[in-house]
Length: 125
Image 1: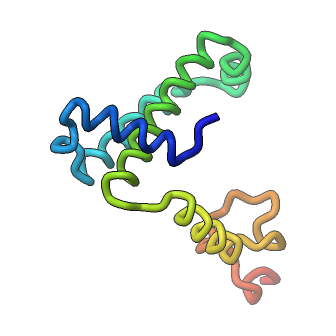
Image 2: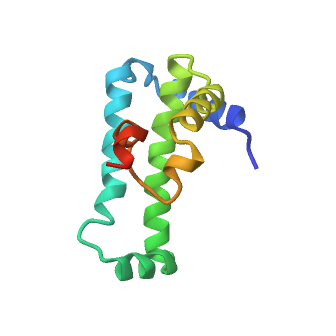
């Protein structure tokens, strides 16, 4: 399996060989991330839980999902490479922050955003 560094270099070489750096501004790469994420989302639009379960078991559907995940990953890696973001360090920092924001005691079994937790004084009210 390729490392993140190897994949980053492969994407960089691919883009540089095609002279695409000039098309990869922060705005354009962010649009690419969003566009591809929305193409992934579109695969699930109007699907029931049962439909999605079937999709996850269907190789053709999984292939479509895999392609969209790869497209999102490509744009994310390209953005980080072009503008010198260390994705692994960024993820570590964000996970540390999330551990503070989403304590196990307050967030277990809940999908409430951290800023919507009731303060202890409201919990008993």
